[in-house]
Length: 195
Image (cartoon, rainbow, N blue to C red; front, top):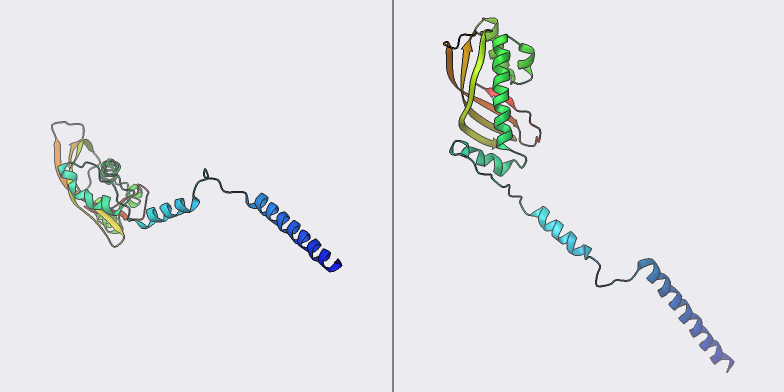
């Protein structure tokens, strides 16, 4: 009889230990209710979004800007309005620096080949320090491409410049300038690579 009492006593001890372990696990791990968010589902949605190719939304472009669609499909941070405003500013800064013979400003905005051409023209006095901007218009996009890790955009400009202060001496020019930057760059810095 003593042996049976020990077995019963052992069962009670093991049951008590099991209840204690279950109680501690429940406190540590908590219990799941129907109101908790399914984190596994969120992970799966995140993975789906990451694996799906991102399609960049192409804004409404004018007929003269249609060639920029290719840039929108391949460069997520591209904004054609910011680019065109920047291109106009760059055109004015570069032409003004060229006319004044300001090589220091030019070196930061143009490629090595374009800089060499500008310096050669300045050294041979082909620039005109008396020339001033009268008007500048972006006529349209000549070409746009994304290849070999670079975005390249050719822009047609129509500019009018006054010689001296005489508004009767207005020179009208049509230029195509090619700007370039790495497609991984999110900054606004473009380099003039061809005129």
